[in-house]
Amino acid sequence: MKVQVDNEVCQGHGRCYTLSPTVFDPDVYGYAVVRTDAVEPDVEKSVRDAVESCPERAIRLVET
Amino acid sequence: MDFESLETNYDLLSPELKANMWPAVDHMLRQCPVAHSEAHGGYWVVSEYDRVFEVLRDYERFGSGRAAMVPPPPPGALAPDMPPIHLNPPEQHEYRKVLNPHFTPAAIAGFEAGIRALVTEAIDAFIKDGACEFVGAFARRFPSRLFFQFFCSIDDEADLQRNVGWLHGILFDPTGENYARLEREWAEWIYGFIARRRQSEPRGDLVDSLLTAVINGKPLTDDEVMATMMILIMGGFGTTADATANAVRRMAERPELQDRLRAEPELLPGAIEEFLRYDPPVIELPRMCRVDTEIGGHQIHAGERVLVQIGGANRDEKEFSGAADLDLDRPRNKHLAFGAGPHRCVGSHLGRMSVRVALEEVLGRMDDIRLVDPSAVRIGAALQAYGPEHMEITFRAR
Image (cartoon, rainbow over all chains, first blue to last red; front, side, top):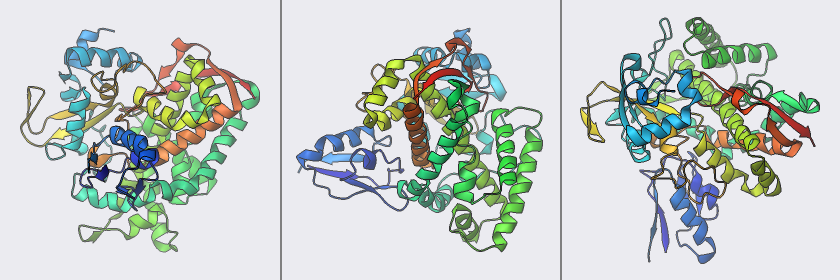
């Protein structure tokens, strides 16, 4: 499974890099960037929390 | 309160509405999720989560601007749009590129110790009493100087006190007869401050970024710098105060919430999100329809104003199951307390950190916080805001 952030949609709420800080990072403007897009089992719950807590619905999980 | 009157006359300034906000919001969600109000020259009120989200995101249909304001600014108030809140993309986005880097978690991390010092100083002043009027003694006290000191490098005590005075006067009495005079006095001071800063060595703060910014190929004018500073100061202060007081109000009503957060402090960041969902400090946001369009089956014409109800979105059962319950374990929480779309609150990370530090110190130093009289909590009059202006509490110093 991979995780993607739609940078056209992200507004920098930062819920993702708060909930799942090893997977998401803020850039210099506070928008989210994905550090490692492969979602390992140990972070899967936090990534799902991030997906479901993004007010812009900007994060997507993709089956690989 | 006559809840049926909300269907045609939702008046965001009504003290009766503020006092009955949550039953009123529930009534609108059930009976009139898209309503037209005759108040203040007429405007639409949109309540449901999905529609609020749609309006906030779609700036091409629902734009921002001074003309969207409900009610319009009082006679004699300053005329210019306040960037970036009154602008639309792409120009709005140019401003955000200048501002955002000052408000990222990394950029504000260095202010945490300073915020904790302001919080500690405020608590020190009343901790021995075992009781206080929490809004004046704490919630509006600790954040009032934060922006001036940390973002504008203003450290002269007399300057700080004058600025805080203007800010309070404008924010908490938005329709008062002194509004225009206070706003002009404040603007004059800021113009003088800008002139001094243009002559002095750069400090690398937010003010320097505004003074050197180039937007649409031009540096910002003094008017633009002044108005930007004003809206940032106004946007950050009352909201932080309200978010803090709202959280403490709910914990005082339900002491088991305090006990749990003292026992499990790692829950606090998630709890703050839930407090923000439950009692959003900004309860409404205005937009101006830019084209003839439709929302929820209602035709809305270009030039008509639309007020989105953040409070309605955050209490919409279709998005939040058990929306009327304050649930510290809520697993997913896409609340809209900081808005959505291009105007997402620029200071959201600073606001969250400020409230977290405030609640850490309150919970750490004050046991058994109770409201003296829950029915005597008064909601303030600030425009589009929700938070107590008066709240007597008792506690045991730890």
